[in-house]
Image (cartoon, rainbow, N blue to C red):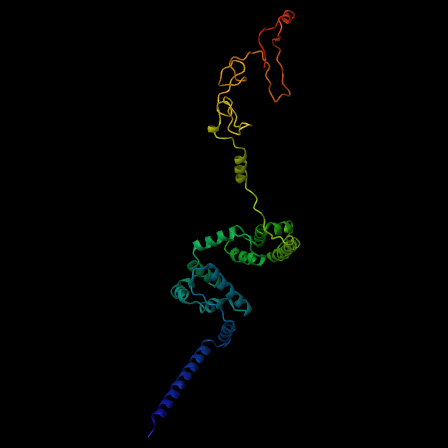
Length: 348
């Protein structure tokens, strides 16, 4: 009596044997189809070499940077493994996943029917599907706006190289791209590099990196040699703005309100009582009396009856000018010798 376990073991052995026979049959068919026996082993060897490097996969994400990076890395592997041109598409398509794999499964027959189909046409078809024009224009605009600014030379160069692939019309060759790289460096670095004939981007990058490091070291040394005074915090007192200065000045020199003025009088105060100037009143509030007409309510200098020939001072006593007018005397006898005498009028 045979135990069930033995029957199961014999069944598994028979199944494995059939699989091996199928594999041998496929190998034989392949050898018959390829009598030289050289092409198939070579293709398998190239695929194995590339597979050892674990190439990246592309899943169809609409990101031009990701797609360009995938194409560039696959091309590097093809170059390193000496992959034949007619095998590149077959090997690369093995690493397409999700949306990209679905697209290739549907569009493969139509794309391969092109008489000039090859690796270049394959990449162009990928870009048309997963690299829309709007994304390409967006990257072009980003490249045209790129400047070093606060970036280091390394970060600026990396970003420049990443975006320069998307702009090939305005800057079609390396020389024009080198000029663009120099132009958008910081002013200090650009000034030092001015006039240097760089042919390759690597030359410009190496020189700019050296200048940038020197500038940073010089700035650090300058900051180190200018410390704050001992015991004094390095805090600057805020400088008054122009508006605050004008407000302070206005508060000091602004004239008094009109309520404190009298008609025809400047904004000043009485030197005795320090009250607002009161030319028609005394300090106690009583009306002043004119010495000329004896009428209360105004001073001598404002008297409407004041003679036109009187002498008026125009200052504080110095520099006064006397107008030629009448001569005033106290005796009648003196009037006989002067023709322009007005008797009986006195000056106080």
